[in-house]
Image (cartoon, rainbow, N blue to C red; front, side, top):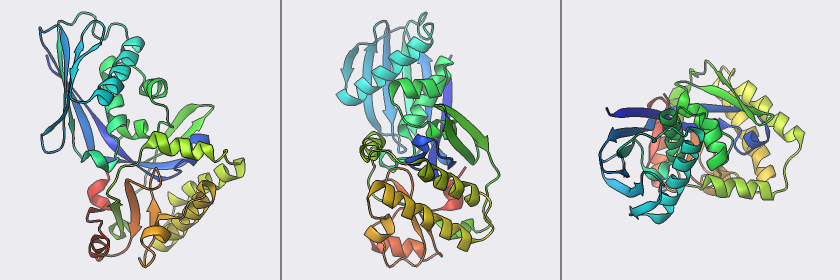
Length: 302
């Protein structure tokens, strides 16, 4: 019998980087996610196929079902990453593939691979569902990271997330701003490596408890604001604090200095999506700058 699992994509509105040190972050699952389909075979192999949103295969691999050794693949680095995840999932649940005669696994992305909405976190959560294992443990043992993306994969609405003594605390919240028609997500035409971004943040030597408290306070205010002006002011304050911590210029200063609204980085600075405020002219403005992917808030958020 075919098994099917699905996980949501993610966007981190506040708390990027600081969430690693215990700051409270505002995270939102997206309409776009990834599914995993698993069908039994008699091949004695684990055959893996990954498809993009257009139904095109972008990765295949074949593993020995007993040892999970790579037999063949179209992408060696991806195959090794998947191998590590599969072995960790099997370690967490030794019965996972024990009585199987063969498996065909297919992943189906619902967003372009360079969008940075969580191709890894959605896969990890889907694998954890299959293995009946804790996804945060699978993430921690195989990848690292804060885990907010796993929370988004598992929840169907906005949430706050923080790490307390290394353990995730997730709280679903009522966050549906009345000014959402003035908010847009703009893709910066490149995907930023989360692992590399975390490494660069750590190389700054860490930040004080005051830094974490400031970011947490902004998150608490963001989820309660009543006006766009308040929301924009908090986003600008957040950008200024993070720019100082990272020793990097904010994205608006670097790419969009003449945009009349706010532009805030989401997640790793330098790639993926930014959050912009403005009117319907946003699409033309960012398009003229070479960034044609502009998605209204209501069409991105789950």
